[in-house]
Image (cartoon, rainbow, N blue to C red):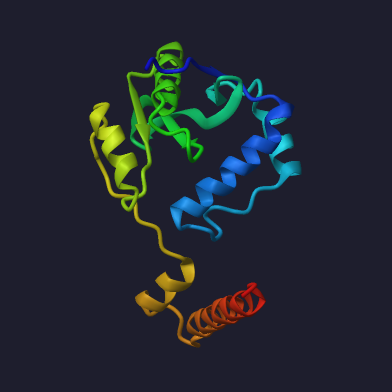
Length: 195
């Protein structure tokens, strides 16, 4: 059975609903529903799309399969690092909707990133992939992406506590309060769930 034709194009205001839905799916699948991945906002997304429409070195795209928006990604030109001037195109937020994987959508989005990199004069394309996303890691490895660093993130509160730079214990108290809030939220969610 032949694959359906995937069209990759810039997003329009009519795509907002699909983009918000995909952003929520991406947040849920990443396990990072905190400040690193804030909840989607239609107003913020609308203004961001308008602001980046003509921003040099940046491109947001959606992927359509049979006229339905089923994927998204952003591409941005960056340098490899603070002391390396070589430009690289960073793929961010690449997501394909559940039920539309293995139909060439992600491959089409990466192909669009490759074209964008060529247009921008970048010799490399990079992507951040969470280690727990095995299928995504395999997909990128099959395309030739190789790991060069492991990026780790820690909250300032955690670092202050671990480095011993919080003599009055404020960070530890804040951590306890945050954990209590999570427990209370989980309890109220379970209590509110229909039986």
